[in-house]
Length: 283
Image (cartoon, rainbow, N blue to C red; front, side):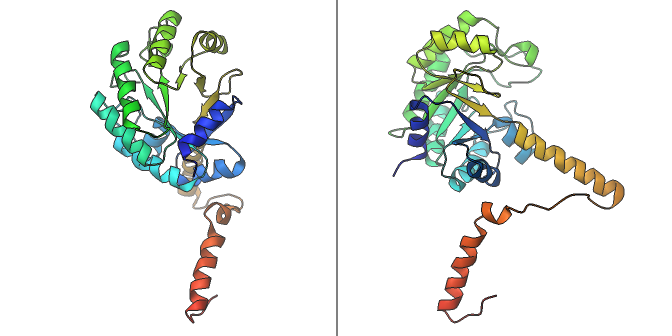
């Protein structure tokens, strides 16, 4: 049987651009699969904010991310890519958590080079290239014989102005990218890039380049998050406010395709079969 990781590798090897769409829960993952996306993506901020109501700045743990990722992966047949942040603080963490992601059925993870706490008021910078190489090597060892796809996230072009840790040097970004590929990364992603930046990176690097956010021609795939979980949170806020202010909620049909997405018919039939065969009544 083809594993989720093998499915993801096949998508990448086909060299046809695809979108790994925002999936922050089992139900939303089922939705993106039914709509037709070939892969799903669980972002760190999507998971930390939606499930734990905390920011994605290093306080959100890998244990919490793996817990949600496993639930999502179990609900779909398309591969799931998960944001693994720094994959812990040591190479031992990286090895251990890579094993846990693999066992959870996650197809790919991206591992970043920022220093914690990240995306915060702390002027953090990036870890050394050598330390990131060791982190990626430990990740590769942790996946064992599995095909888990390792995506190195380099934040060199994600600068302090945008609450990142990078210095903004394209030369350094390329040097790090090559070093990460040597350490075992299968794909690399650079937040904060322009289409021109990505063209330069693609030409310079020996492994595929993907993007966080909107589709960029020439890249391998897009990890497309934000529109789903933030849209759901905003809708909930709007309706909760309306209910509080007016005592009612103005809305259309609740969710007509809900039975399809939760396998209602399958479970109804399963229960009916049991009831019939054991002489019990059915509705």
